[in-house]
Length: 77
Image 1 (tube, rainbow, N blue to C red):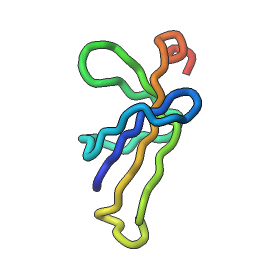
Image 2 (image 1 turned 120 degrees about the vertical axis):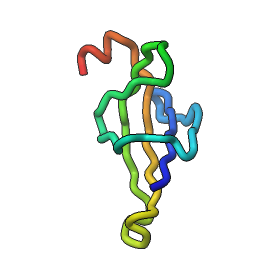
Image 3 (image 1 turned 60 degrees about the horizontal axis):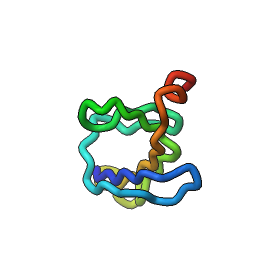
Image 4 (image 1 turned 90 degrees about the vertical axis):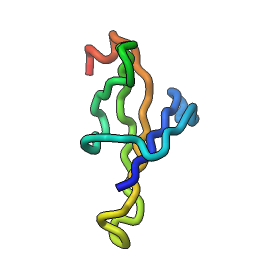
């Protein structure tokens, strides 16, 4: 399965993309995920989109839209 992670701002504008990201599992909308490294940055998953699932179930791609959140917001979620 191919993954694409897209970081968006509060208005939904794309800030960066990471193609072929390595993930152990697919997060769900509303899940919190930690950023890479020890910076402690948290992200919330705004959307998960599966592409071509019916045509290629094992090879379909997934786009995961994430938004950076501060530590206070992460504690509330």
